[in-house]
Structure formats: structure tokens, C-alpha cells
Image 1 (spheres, helix red, strand yellow):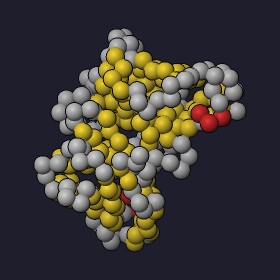
Image 2: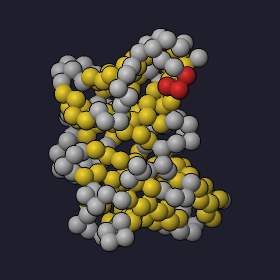
Image 3: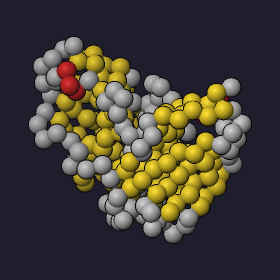
Image 4: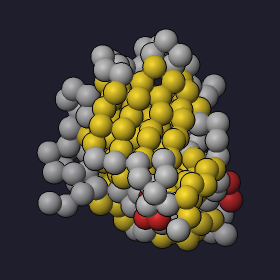
Length: 114
Length: 112
């Protein structure tokens, strides 16, 4: 019974490159969330998606960041032209989206921008 | 605007004693509250939750209390064990939005 799968676990990019972070939700879950954790800080909401729809992207910077959750395949968080301030741990979570239910998190992708 | 606050960044407790972690929120629309535990280099793990229609929920050594009038919830761990040493996050959500808001975390250290 696979949990939320994120890859890669670690990603190193030079300034100006693109970063692609992938997330496969738990089986049966149709809601995906992305959170960012900066060093010594809490989990900051970025975006909430359902299959093929972005429901709430109020926590995501308007420039350089985008997210998708296609009908087939994993959810992707894409960061274009990365800067040093993008270095953080990015966590994906999923839920069945019915009633009051907890989010289940993956182990995150640690992005380092050099 | 920090809607969910954990004002204690860290807490140390002796093994076998009670650990009490606190969380305050400002949005009265929140109707579901959760606690997560996080070890370094891992994702947060769900511990326990409580609906706003209840004031207490218990699961083994973990009990969550909700005081809606004070907009306050707490997590009690009894007895505390060294393996409980981790960062604990509280979270809140209004079911109508499905937007889960997390606090900044409290680092618990249980001393053997």
C-alpha cells in the first residue's frame, strides 16, 4: 500500500535552471497539495489541485512557479529560473477529498540552488 | 497573517512525564484540527485529529483537547518516550475550502 511518493528526494540546480518536482498521491486520493518548508520555518501552503484543476494557488508565487495534476501521471511542481531563495524542502500531500480527512505527506524533495 | 500559531518553538520533557504542546488559531471558521509529527529528512506523519463538534479525542498515549471559545487546542502525550522527540505541527482547516493551514511547529525533546 504505497504512500505518497515524491521524487527526486534531492535536487541540485544552478541559478537560472528549471526544477521539476514530482508527486504521486496515495491510491484512491484525488486531491493533491504542495507545501514548502524553509529552514527553521513551518509548512507554507502553496497550491491545492484536483485532477486537471487548480483549486487554490493563493500560496504560490505568481512568477516562475506553476503546478499541474494531469488526468494521467503525477502532479508536477515546476520552478523556472530558480534563485537561491527557492532552496527549501517541498512536500506533497494527498487526501481523498471527502469529509474531514487528514493529509498524507510524502518525504519531500529537498531543492538546493547553487 | 498567521492563522495558526504555535508560540513555543521548543519543549523539553523527562521520559515518563507528560508533554503538552499548544496551538492557537484565529479563524473561527476552522472546523477540523490535526496534529502531525515530523522527524528530520522525513515528511510529516499524521498523529491525531479532532472535529470542532468535539472537545476531546484520545488515541493511545495521545489526546487532543479543543477549546473553541479560546480558539486553542493542545496535544497531550502521556507517558512521553524518547522516540517522541520530533517537531510537532498543528494544522487547521475549514472543510468548505479544503485549505489546511499549519503552525510553525514545536520541537519536542524527551530526555531519557
